[in-house]
Length: 516
Image 1 (cartoon, rainbow, N blue to C red):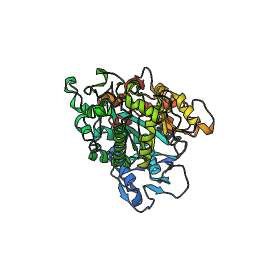
Image 2 (spheres, rainbow, N blue to C red; image 1 turned 30 degrees about the vertical axis):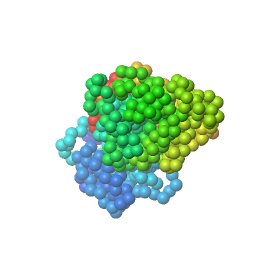
Image 3 (cartoon, helix red, strand yellow; image 1 turned 45 degrees about the horizontal axis):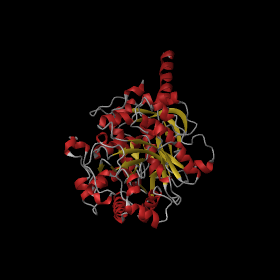
Image 4 (cartoon, helix red, strand yellow; image 1 turned 120 degrees about the vertical axis):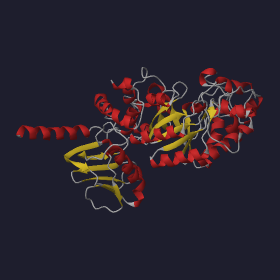
């Protein structure tokens, strides 16, 4: 009997120890307690009215995971309860405390997002298993533990290219939910490019009429083309707000604009624009760009920025700026006249001059402008309120940070999730150093965070997009949230293996090759 009791106690200890190590991203501090809290049909969620959204999401997830439908009560009695408490303490944004004892659970934070992330960590402490939609309610043990947690970076992002391949609003919602589960908080939507313009602009109605579909001769699937209505965008913003994810729209300028120029060819230098083609059926980077010497181009983008800003409540708006050919500008009388009248050093300086005009409109609309790192080229007057996305490598980002620009690190070497796992596997993502070894706080404080980019020119179906994102997105989440001292990939890999069931729970068609 003593041996049997020892086996039971040992098993419970092992359960608590293992379960406490299952959270991704790894919390800043965890301390194991004694015993376990039991969620059963009588357990309640106790939360004030102001936390009803977070309480409702927690209630829904617990029901789907355990079968137990917990009642939500506005007053805290502290008996057999999960209590959500908004504190008045000064604490880092998005931070939380999660305290689990044998008598109850308390999640406390100074802001709503912290409460939400505390709920996500609590859910990950539930036993992962194979879920069924008709699952019967059963008591569930959660190990006693104390967690104090906060993010390393404020920008923990993913970019989806919605131009080259239209993705359904439902898929975007599922991506938002999956991101939120792993405490990722920025979904950057690449809405315009050579292959399509995906949002309506009232001032330029031909965008919706002509710039959203491929030429019929290419026989592209219907689901790969189209645009998001204002109602679609509002619905996505509402859902993202619930999940504490910021939707950052991108309007490409002045290059990567073939679709827009197909609708309005008079805004290009040549006026000769071919029909819209799938990525591999034409130039990877089209020669035609907006004619910056034509006042109509600046007017177009002022209108597009104003209307996009009204559709998306995010503080940020991305204005593109990458891979801009200058060939047409060099041959265009209007552009060359602008070089002289604006007293620019050369044709290359036209890009910075034009982008700064777009910056002014973004600021007028209450937004902070974001651009790819090429915006720094040939530009002597770029204001410091730009956020630089460093994609061509880490070096441009570190140099920009040293000059006082805020930077999001997203280099092709580690953060391009359209690349194969042979070139960028989950371990490589986990080992990414956003600071490139730099310890100068005057530089590193300008690194807002990191972001993965997914370009949709190769993998275009939802299942294949899933596989490109997962499990790499788990490593991204850990690197963006957890301490810089969290460097043990084998420990992370153990948790990653455990999360196969969580990915299954969220219906993720993950890449199995990185789970070996």
